[in-house]
Image 1 (cartoon, rainbow, N blue to C red):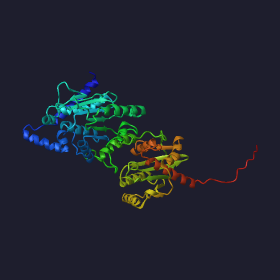
Image 2: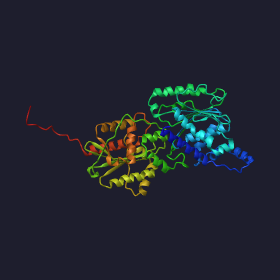
Image 3: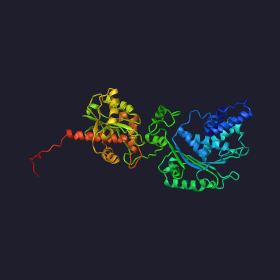
Image 4: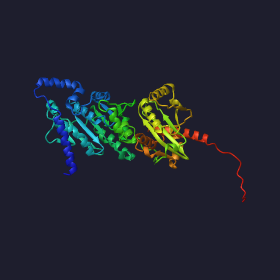
Length: 498
């Protein structure tokens, strides 16, 4: 046995011990008390989960968890796609539901499929461990392990419920548990990054899912079909399953208002900490079901050590308030830019998915950073300076004792992507747009760089930072050319003739 296999066996052993040690039972309970307790638990599935899985159910479930479970247990014939963010317990919650259906004999054959056989077997192993090591399950539903039919990847319980794991591409044809065809088809983690880069691989896998895997179900018996997985690409198995599903459940780590979707488990500070350790592109895909590929415009952004602030004649700080709460417009951005000769320098920036007050604090940080060393013009798009928004921003700035006054940019903006590409891409590709080397590790500068790299026609990526940078560049140009008028005069005479 290889060392890696020993480590895996040790980890599963520790997992089994944890299940066993966390599920003690009351030995003094009478049979009648036990019968009533089981009946009461089965009548309230949330209480059933908490009792039989105390090691997992340490946080109060969110409303979306409860709604999802009711759909699964109350619909014998059902097709659902569950695209929950990481840290929202999609596989764990699904295990609770399927074990409930199996132990109450509502389902008889669970076929779990993943991108390969090893992964499928590993995803099924927690089910087997719960059934053979959970003392509460064994005490109330009997010992589940059966002699000769209890191996990793395939096993049958004492009451005749079968579980089997297969990998994509394996032949599941003829799969039966006695006369019962699979009545739970669980597809978990079917998509991989590598596969999603190959359209033919996705086509091949989807044909196998439809023809071979789903083809194992009975026509006359109610079947539960579930797809679990984040939307990691615009074309993947999870996305294709959506067109056939009775319900599509897309739940991100935060809701449309920027708040945790499961605050009992994931606090705002916890989410902030984790997201700060990943790139914008990664967090959008894994935590917001927003598969963004690298854009086609800004392949690379350039950094350099910038001169002292006093080297600039003036600076512009352009603000994008983005007060809308949709997933596309929930960043507020401020970009401080200066120009020296023909170069444009992004000196400092502040990008946040938060409240107006939090954003105002970030503007004050920029104000204090400049510290009156050079004049700063503060601008924002006119559409954002509506009375109610303008008052909210100004009130917050006043409370913070700031002297910032936002001027409305009345320019007719036009298409955002076209503006950004036309104004900034030539500068970037010709070595005339630079980001401040001293700010390279600043989380806001990291987000700004990622937003530039994600920019592309039709992209779903956030673009508030690049939009603010384009706005700053245009204001700088207006003021630069006003202060530097074109000199028109007589042609200079030359004494030497040719």
